[in-house]
Length: 225
Ligand SMILES: [Zn+2]
Image 1 (cartoon, helix red, strand yellow):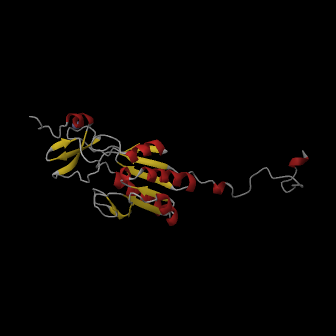
Image 2 (image 1 turned 90 degrees about the vertical axis):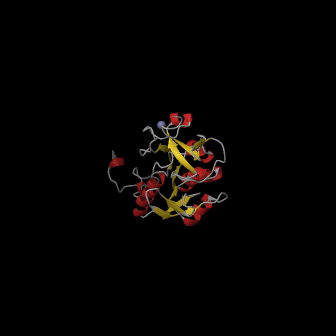
Image 3 (image 1 turned 30 degrees about the vertical axis):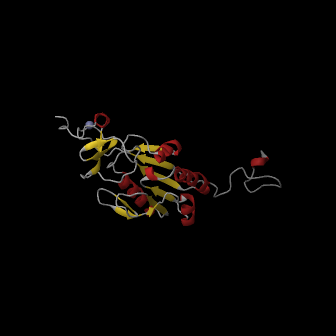
């Protein structure tokens, strides 16, 4: 029993059974890689700015990224009127080098469907090797209902994927799921993958549809009648 007789009594070669004070303080939660996806108008950019705000309030340093934002400027803009300056990512840019040069704690990546595959992989490296939390926001599929390559890579690599459904509805009232491209009143299924447009009316615009009406190509109840 003499081994337990006194906490101060460590002889030569003995080590305390308890870890040194302060070890637990170094155990930070592991960084996370999250992908939030959904159709146009589902509130992705709004949530991106909210998460950015929440982290900033905790004193964390963040980097806000966008690509091909609908405004055409280096901003994250939302359809409900919020906007925030952001770094406009170019195709060849190295996100890893950029984030490390700025010594950031987290990244909010909006319009992530337009990033390159290497850029998505650089986000994963930032999470795993540098402890940077990465939150990517984007469309999952294009106007042909096919996954964007960057979004497919995000599904493959992210720790969590979260489908956003903020009551964006097809004209029939069903949940909107697919991004239809409308040109002069008709749904089109062929053409360039990236043509920037909005969901407002216009010669070329986008309309979020449920799967049934996307497949039928019906943009309103009057079509074909
Ligand atoms: Zn519908």
